[in-house]
Every structure is written in structure tokens, then in C-alpha cells.
Image (cartoon, rainbow over all chains, first blue to last red; front, side, top):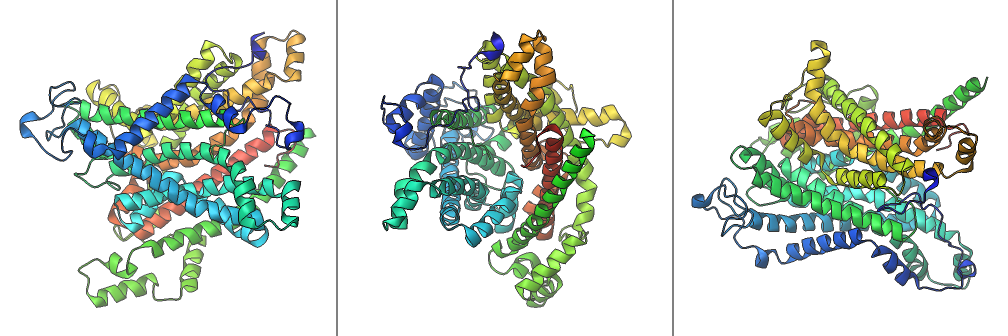
Length: 313
Length: 323
């Protein structure tokens, strides 16, 4: 009967809702596989996830090695070689209306995107995780204050919040990255607080506390491993959002400033050049979709392999 | 009788939610108010401009109340908000509330069309994938929604306006026509921005619905209904969907905020003068009251949407909706 088919497709996220046993070793069946190995096996099971990881790795390597990989100076204009189509001898992905090499601009754009993603996620983690641990462990007054602030931050439409912060602090890449990071703060906060709270209630924590285990040890040994899985899912989704937000802000002229290349600013230049050549628009557009796709697929893969429901804030 | 009980429960729910919304809005306005402290250097100097004389800077300071103690500044700001006063825009020299209300219909139109697209695409796709879980239809929807989630709405919008709008000339590439000028001209201008904006929401809805429907279809009462000889179509549409829709309703509510944020870029792409465009223009001009006002306004819309979602939830869920 088709209606009761067990899904085994690419993404069976929320359907696999049977919760993972979290009651300690007594309930775990005899067949033992270390959590790390089980995670790796489940995570790398699908070729889609492996492909996504490959794309992410390529992106990060490109970002780090941009200066070596780029065949041309991304700002150098060659007015003899304007609007070349992809596949031209010296310009693999063609050139834009000013004769700048599209591939080189794309490569340096990858660096900007990676910087934006890493910086904003770091800001989100640093500002979000510490209050979450405090709120989860101490509860009471701290929890009330931090949680209300997080709720308020969550009620802002994400892109608009970033826009407002950039507007006040002034439009440039650093401020754009900070602004995107603040968008992540309440999302990371919620996940870590929930995980901390649930761990806090466990009997083994109480036992551990009663024999005088210091708090930082409890955090590292018990809270962190429980937080890691849902946090990793959220981080990979945050990476995708950061790419998108940086591109949006730079497209609007609020992030990277001309003539520096970013995928977003390439889109706005590509739009102006559309009637002469579509490539300066199509190339960055495809790249953005590909990278966001890779981030999301990785997030889905992570979510599936830790056996929890997807936590999209 | 049952409906009377339900109505009363929904009313209670609304009352409880309002009790949490008011403090939330106070904190939101505190955060929005605090934006002034993010201005690097002296806010009065920045607002008055580089070339302003010290007297002009002082005049700005007094005019904005920046010389008052912080708590008094916040109190003034808050009591202004409570009276619907969002301050005066620096660039337009007009009350921000007026400017926002002026542009509200445009953005509301885009958001509504986007939401309609999202539901029209997302629900059938989700039902199809949920019913055919594990089969090729499911995979097709999954691939489609994964792609939809990864495509930034403004990239899609750019391609649409350039190809469908300008090269093919099928739909107006830019601009907006008020509804008063007729339904078709209005809709014609909204189809592309609405679609571009709605695709992500559609993908989100399809995914959530697929997951919850597949889950519901495995439950006993569905098996019973099928065993009774009920047609599979009626089982899905009459029984399963009502339960499967509940998590979807939450997703729909969350999407309102994303759609509002998305209008900032979409309106720029399509040259539409709505709230999103207003936000971008105020940001580019560094118009602080306009930025603050815009943000508070957007939160108000998003919170109202989530309240509506809760009410829907209350009606859908026969067991009582403690969300």
C-alpha cells in the first residue's frame, strides 16, 4: 500500500521522528558502534551529501588560495577584451563590460563570501552561546532576561535587522558581517539553551555536581556534546543564509564597495550589462545557488545523521 | 456547542498571547531605540552632517532629545510609539508613520501575492510528495524544494525581470499599479515579484507538509479509514491533511517575516516603491528615524501574523492549542 510506504528518499527529515535513546547505556542495544562512527556512516551514506561537502571544500579552498588561483587581477580592466564569452582563450569564464576577468572576480568573491560566512557565524556563536549556557545552567533571572531579549531579536525579519544595523553603523563589508552575525545570535541562543536545560535536568549531572565537579568541566564534558549536533545543523544553514545575506547587501551597495568583487556586487554589475552579455550575471548567480545548496544539503545530512528533527528557526 | 467552547478557548489563547506580545514589543522598541548607540562617534554630528557648525549640531541634539538622560530619551521614544508617532524622517521631513502607511499597500500586495504563490505551489507539492513518499514524485518535489530554498529570491527576480519582463515582454518588468486602477493591471505587476519572493516559502511549506503528511498517513486512524473502504483521496483531503497542516501553519507564520525582509531586495530589483525600497533608501541615506520606524513597523506586522497563525492553530487543533 503506497500510503504507508516507508520513505527512503534523499531527505526523510521529520518523518524519522523516533527519538534517539538518551537515557544512558542501559537502553542501548548490545550491538555497539561508537557515536562518532555511527554519525560518520550515516552522514556520508548519501552521495548528495558527499557532493555537497566537496562543493563546500572547493569553496573554502578557493577562498583561502584566491590570490594564487585567480588567473588575473580581479580589478584589472582590459578594454581590448571586453564582454568576452566563457571559453575565451585567456578568460575561462569570459569578461565583463570593463574587460575584467569574470573567473578572477568570482574567485575573490568566494573569499568575501567565506569571510562573511565565517565572521558572522563566529559573531553569532560568541554572542549567542555564552548567555545560553548561563541561562540554561543558572535559570531564574538570567534566563528570563536573556530569553526575552532573544525572543525580541527573533521577531525582527532577519534581512531587515541586518539592513538596519548596516544603515546605522555605515555601509561596508565589516559592518555587514557583524549585522548578519547578530541575526544568528537568537537562533544559536535558543538551541544551546534548550540543550543545556535538558542536560541540566539529568540525574547524572546532579550526581556529578554533588561530588563537586566544576561547572566548566560539566559544560565541556556533558553539555557540549549534546549541543554539538543541533548546533552543527544550524551552523550549516547559517552559512547558507550568510552567503545569501552578504550577496543581498552587496547587491544593494551596502556590503562590499565597488570596485571590489563580491558575488552580490557582480550580480548588480551583471544586471547592468545584461543586454550586451548575460554571463557576468549568470556566472555569479549559479555560484551562489550552488554554494547555498551545498550548505543546506550538508545541514540536512547532519540533521538526518543525528536522528533529530530538523531545527529550522 | 462544541464551536462555542472552541471559540472561547481561542479567545483565551488570544488573550494569553496578547499578554506576551506587549512586553515583547516594549523590548523590541528598546532594541530599536538602542540603534542610536551603534552610530559611530557623535550621533548628533553624524545626523547633522560633516559640514554642520557646532550650533547646528547642538540644535539637532536638542531637537532629537539626545541631550536628555538615556532613560528619559527611551521614555519619550516609547510614549511616541504608543501614540503611533515614529518620529520624523530626516530626508523627507515628514512623519515616518505617514511615509510607511503610504507605502504599506504596495508591500502588502507583493507579500499577499507571494504567499498565495507559496500556498498554491507548496500545498499540492507537499501533498503529492507525502502521499508518494519514497517514490519518484517525492524525489522530484524534494529536489525542487531543495533548489527553491537555495535560490535567493532576488537572483530569481533578476532573471525573471530581464528575461520574461524585458526580453520576452510578457509581463511588465518594473513598477506597480494600485488596485484602484483595476485588478488585472495590479496583478500583472505583482506576478513576477510575488513569484520570486514566494518560491522559498513554497519550498519550505512543501517540505514541512511532505514530512508531516507522510507521518500522519502512517497512523492508525488513517489505516482504519482506508480499511473502511474510504477512497485514498478522501482520506488524505478530509482526514489526514487537517492534522498534517498544523506544523505547516507555523511555518507559514514564520515565513511572513522572511517575506517582509525579502521585499527589501525584491522591490529594488523590480523598481517598486514599497516598504522594502523605503528601508533600503533610508539605510543608504542614514535616516535613523526612518530606519527605526521601518523596523518597528515590520516587527508589528510579523507579530500580528504570528498571532493570526496562533488563532488558526487554535481552530485547527481540537485538543487545545498551547503553543
